[in-house]
Image (cartoon, rainbow, N blue to C red; front, side, top):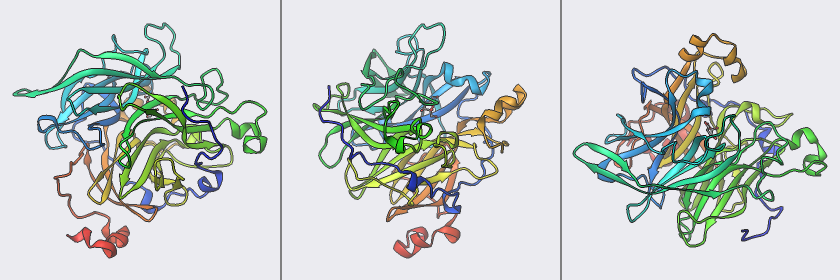
Length: 434
Ligand code: FRU
């Protein structure tokens, strides 16, 4: 099962790093307002990912790009959406207007009582692999929080006169479950929220090896010396997990020890993914204000780390790890950020979460009357944020429209925040004013 032994040399996000988190201007997105129309007026959509090729580039079958989103009926109270999440897909020729494709992962055929976030691969031979989190067990009467990494494999993408469609048959398979050694099982969990989810396909350009990243927790048994023996801190034991496919087969995975550990720092390192630029590995993850360990404070935000090779040693971007967060007066306006590279900048996608809401905790949403809970939930793609990056730093450069996900051939307008934050870009390359 294992192809290397666990070691204490796992790169870590430490309390010292995280203690430096502050809401810098150049890490803070502007306030988001609702778009004229939602991505799908009939469904709440949230976590989103692009169909990609093996090398990570955005797939464009028939000239379309495809996104996958978690979805739930729009009439459902937004807080209940995770309990019924279904993966749907949308496609676009211009990366701005998204057409509805329908259900991507058939909930009746899939593992889990609902399907959570994942990634999607269009392989070189045209075979499609839809990775997802199987949450709970299919058919269960009472929801459970078991999580397994799963895949629907074997489908194809058809394009033609009438747009794009995903065609089966799909074969569903469980790819990985926690081993209890590197990755905590639900039974071992002492923390607030249990995680083993969000599979994300990655091919290492350095050697062509094939990996699956995921969100996990590191086992910290009671009485462990971790965090100086502080039991309260030990309950916050997030990690970024990784599995390897020795043969390159996108369904054949062997767990390896974690890529990054955040024991004593944060409980949830969600939707981990990597952008490689110029031989450097930028590892991103989303996390929450309420999942930081006692004595630390952070935000609902995108965090990131950079290393010279896949295994690290990862250093937090901007020293603390904070890359992009929401403004103070709208701290939950966006979540579940995913980054991809566009020429020499990073584009950050996310979904429009709760707006017109400045309470310190998202739990307080439940105190609002139901119609207000509905009104204040975006449930659609958020504006894409543009970041500059280099020398271990990232900075805000601009914002595109809701759900605008440009591809390589699209020239972007000059950066909006050039005057405020862009001096580094301008000095370096003149790129801003090209
Ligand atoms: C992030 C997340 C994912 C999970 C999904 C469930 O927004 O917590 O980790 O797959 O939401 O809705």
